[in-house]
Length: 290
Image 1 (tube, rainbow, N blue to C red):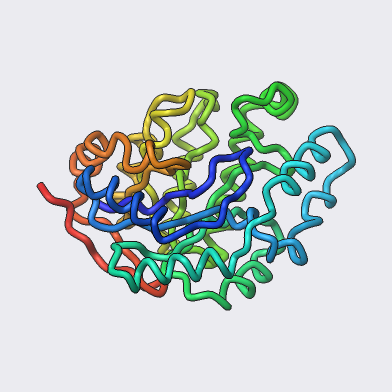
Image 2: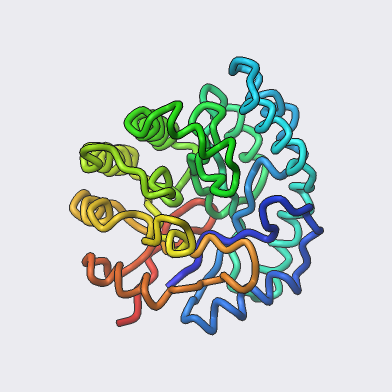
């Protein structure tokens, strides 16, 4: 097993410069859970280097309380230094830790070419692609009354439709290697009348683009209470020949590779015998131990 989705900082907390010791702690915790390799994948928007190309992204939307919320959220988080982050991750690799250098990259409509240009200047092993907001609505902020109230304004069907379009466009951009928590839109347990229609589109987008999909234990810690992706979607991924990674999406040491015993059983039951690791954005197969 691999844990290819790990963060160094919790949401809402200031970044602290990463150290090799931090990464060693993550690697050791993961090893104890049967993980042979980890990827450090901090959010791209947490780095000051994104300010010039993405800092005004949300201003394309009408002035509103939600837009102000997202602009403040961005300013509160975009403080870390990308160069230092990569330097520490590379040093951890050179020190012999089973760590690969990654990034979690949100979808920015109309801006992915600029994102790719920025990231091309760094020696990343793997890039995760995520949809964390629909337009200026960060639907997975589960503890915000403002955010959760928008479900009634936007509507479940439109939320799923807009999310799926964004995921399709992200996959087609070829800017990333893995779709992280591919059905994150289900986080609050709100489903359209026929979710399979959207799941089929997600699976087809992955097949068409050749991108891998993440199987994540993070959903067990969220209101939905199940893994990402849903069992139906994982079966479609397998049917369509979509490769997978496994991940915990931990934002602290305690959640590193959490519930991986359950994830291992899930992927084996779906018929997967290996997961995809990455080096320099090139995939390699890593067998799942029986």
